[in-house]
Structures are given as C-alpha cells and as structure tokens.
Length: 111
Image (cartoon, rainbow, N blue to C red; front, side, top):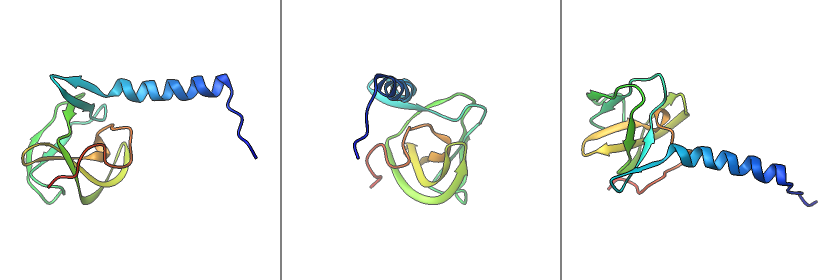
C-alpha cells in the first residue's frame, strides 16, 4: 500500500522542520539550543541530580552542547531521558530541559 504525499503534507512537514531549525542557533561558530521556557535550569558537576549544582541558568537561556553522555534518568518538559548535555567542562544539564528536537544524541558522546 503506497502512502500518497500531498502538497499540504509536505508544507506541514516543512513547517515543522523549519520550527525545529529555528530553535537551533549558531553563535560565534557554536550551535546553541534553548532551555525550556519558564524554567531556571540547574547546571550540575556531573550527569545526575546527585552531583552538586554548579550554577542555575536564568529563564530563556540558550546553551551550547559540547558533548552528551548517559546518566541519571530525569523527567522534564521535553520528556524523560537519561541523556545529559555538557555545556562546559564539568557542567551538565539534563536533556529533558533542553529543546534539541531529538530524543537521542545531537552531538558526540563525552569521552
């Protein structure tokens, strides 16, 4: 059974991809992603809530993602995940609070 792709379907799909692409910005050569609106996001020293809070990001912050790793599973506005985003050396935020447009890794695994 074939799936018929109409102009309306293509326009809707293109609009959805354009919205996701608009969320990703490049600043000084680094791709940044928005944190969940209405949240001040904790930045931790490692990939889990058992790690100390290094700082708290203000509302409507954009973050670069240097690398990603698996850690403690966390639920947030963008679902439940065990992916943690390294935004700087020794600084991690749960991917559940960052709009990457993906349920998986969007960059390289941390070493």
